[in-house]
Image (tube, rainbow, N blue to C red; front, side):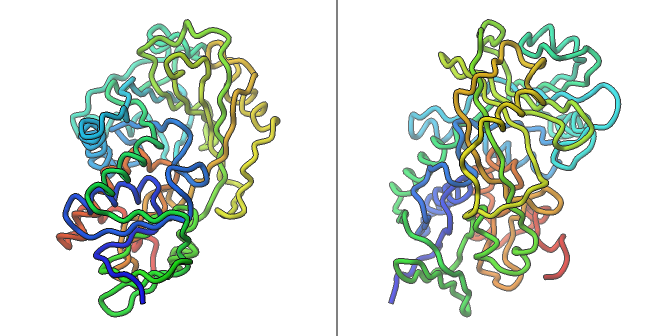
Length: 390
């Protein structure tokens, strides 16, 4: 016994929520399952804000997805009345000389600029001296840095985006089931059987977007390709907000040669005297269930000392808040959006390697189109086959 549906979604965070809405818009019967109650703070899709930028230095293949996401956020805002996307601008800063890297890609400013030119994305390039004059919050600029600025970038509100898409999906007939853990995903002939703690779901296709839990559900080759890393977000109180004008952009600031020699952050939200910043680490792996969720005070102190002090105007050492989240990362820091090599009716959307949220709405649309029309060519750059045989 169980229920039957066209599409079953496993995980309803950024990707699952986007897929739920997009499949429901196309008139398919949809059942979405999540062990928690999205939006929540136990995975990879929380933390108040997420950076978005159209000229994606990680690779030109990402640009259409984020462009689609920007269009979809505005569409969803019009449908719901919710504020989802703030186009405050985005700035990427790299040293004027020497090596730098972000998400495994060298010379990130040049790569971002190349994507912007190729896709007609409005942008500017400038020196650190010009950026410091225009954006006085960046007090640590020495003047010779290379800077990319995209006025149409900014940030989205992840919890709002997830909630809005799940609500619209439900209004269109999708069944959203929370507090229900998926135990297994198995293809039997032309159907997929999903066993949960509350029963069996049989579907024409399963979309697995379970983040840090995906490897265990998908098996080979995903169990060897997906690594879970703990990342920490920090909110520091500002002594003064004067330098953070209404046009203050989100930022990615590479100040050394390696992937960990950088910080990213957000301007303070209106009326909120805090600045949110973070860096990334890839040396210590964990699992979704074993994640240390508490953030020790010394972690925030180290973040301030190593990355914030002397760079951001009036950012005090006083910690207003800190939170841990998950990055589920592939060996090349890219996405996997593909059919399972052993189960062609199971679609995996993981991992997104720490830069997925800005693409999520576009990914939902692209996956729904690929499944309905059986046309996977637009998603070929994200194929699991690039990693070799299982």
